[in-house]
Length: 397
Ligand code: GLA
Image (cartoon, rainbow, N blue to C red):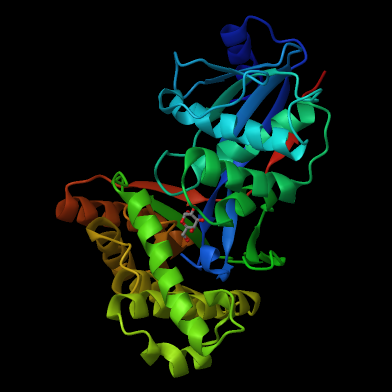
């Protein structure tokens, strides 16, 4: 949708369009490094060019009104004075509400706050529930829009952390920092090598001349994903506790080198927990190897590491499932596809593949045919471009 159309829509929803500002936050795709973020390991995500837009205008009465073109007919209102509370029926609007609450806390409470209310209209083109971070996207676009309208310069890294806290504390999903970081800090043409323990990061150019990143959506809804996600987190914590008995200086799995792991792994008696930790530690190494191979223009090695990552998520971490594994197998078979893996939390959602440009059409056609024949579901493809992180879009006067 064009900028002016978004503003017309705002006028239709709220009855005026004076003093509106426009903000954007992308979705993200993770190229490698899955389920490592909450273990203090490395990830390698990139921002996409699709995302969430917010048209916003200030109010002076302490009321925030949120609407979304994606969920027509649902207008959610909250008031700073009365307090911001989670309500199940507010559905998607709990994300902006949670972020508002975090922003208020950054300001040390609500008394005499700069947060004086706003009308906000959202529009997003990230498929929901596909593992491309539509929730982090709405969190970050809200964070930037509401802080700017309040006249407060909050650093992007603070908005990133506020988004994660909103998700952890308000919405109740115990996610790591990767999604919000990629959505907030993304940079066109680059992926971010992020150390999730120290938050040190490096932009790495994604130079893949002659190839395309193709995202394929399984179109399987991610049922039970949140409880399984939390279960994996707690399995990692149990593994860490055993390792700490041997290596007391270690404070997260990201601290453990592969060689240390080889020496301590027999101390973990539970075979399932041992596999979970083995995934995290080898995946962490794969991110380092993959970023290095990309920097050396060795796309073949990069692609091989993507496949190894998927196999580890399938066999050791067990978060893939029939649909993602079918896509992986069908994609890996195709001529011109040199790397492929699931991306995001798993249990459905999307796959990402590295495909020779001239093979993309055949890839889409054949993978769709084979995937549908085996699963009964129709996949969706997005040939993706890497875009910028969260920003204000300046409107012409
Ligand atoms: C989800 C979470 C992230 C990360 C990934 C798995 O996207 O929100 O924090 O844990 O799963 O890598």
